[in-house]
Image 1 (spheres, one colour):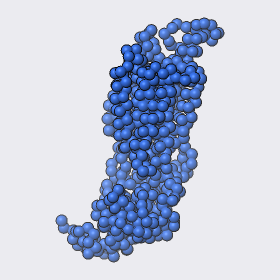
Image 2 (cartoon, rainbow over the protein chains, first blue to last red; image 1 turned 180 degrees about the horizontal axis):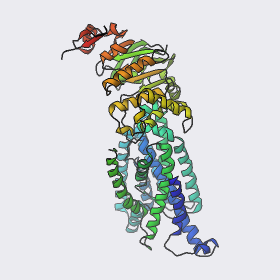
Image 3 (spheres, one colour; image 1 turned 90 degrees about the horizontal axis):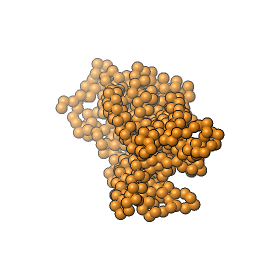
Image 4 (tube, each protein chain N blue to C red; image 1 turned 90 degrees about the vertical axis):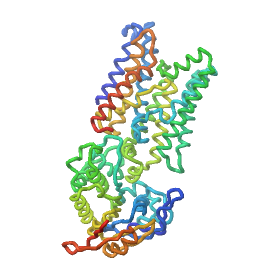
Length: 320
Length: 253
């Protein structure tokens, strides 16, 4: 309930703040330029940050359960570095995309899917998927992708190099409504799949044998988690670039408050994650106005200290 | 007849751990599975629970274990690990509630499930710490919670991997007495154990494993004699008679 209130409050309040002074009466009466600023710059950006934050926090929660690693996050399986290689390649080649869809988005999506397929293929041992091998495969793919990004960055021109750095820092830009609607539909559909298995995540978080002996098709369910979570992350990362910490700290903060039941944690993570990112993005837009800070920087600056605080309180409450 | 094993083999890579086991198990009774470390006790239980790939026949109700659906098998057979390592703050009651997974189709459990959990917590004497974080419990308390989870599953067969290793004396006796009374009818329990005296006192049948083969199988006093223990464990023991006239195994290091 608290999470829902937070989510709705973030949705209601954050669009009210911005760099430009606008009048809401003028905006709703359809007068220029207030209408454009509110409906075409601010609102889509807030909506995107709400679904992006929700998707990242939910994926982080599920990955931590399925990999049985409290430090797992949406990018653990190499999705964001794959997306980054795609995006950086598109920037270096100056690819504009097809049919009005940005080349960076397409390339990032393809990169994310390629990285995910590679990691899953490496993690497959016979018919079983080993979470330990998956983690190692993720680390390997992440560092290989990083090397490729460094190489591309090195051969890029000055302006390309600036675009690359900017993309890698993660940022939420206003997107057109059709793109937003498509992203929202995808995020909601994939999130619904992850919610449906909330009870199974509880058992898998304890162990694969434990879950199997209690009637859960553990390997198959884990694969559903990996794929749905990675598609969520891939879709969001293609639009926003990598945004760290949301997927890591939101689930941990909620576990301190609500315990470990994923039937509570999953919806709460989505709502709180969305609210958190919308809040961070508002800070990013307004603190140093008119200069904007990349939202990835804000989440890291807020998320880092919060995570340290969680770790410390966790030590006190038997969480080691 | 519940389980029928014929030429059962289990290997981890090239290391063969179970090397051809034949055995039949009925629908009730307490069976103690004994043997030195590495004899294959846990692996045998894992194969019977459908958690390990195996060769040969491992039949439950006449059907290969691997052919059963997970959920169908889990509503009949419960596997109880020695311990659990948790990374997340589940309460003891939440862990026990997981035993109800095979029965609930939806996202949430029914009042009937909650009742089964309460009953299981009561008979394992785990009610007092049901609301606590599982990770804050002692080894013995954890084992009682894990056993409660298995009982909440309402199985016909319990496969227990050393269920009393971490328990204090009173609870060791309490758990084995509980298993003994539960297995008088309609429940088969197969428990791997290192405590030969508990096996001798409570088990209806003892199965001794050595190097992945059956080294003895039958009523407890017949299997756990001086010669067999020497052969299986490589230890010389003395057989005493306890106050009630029951045999008692003792040894000098």
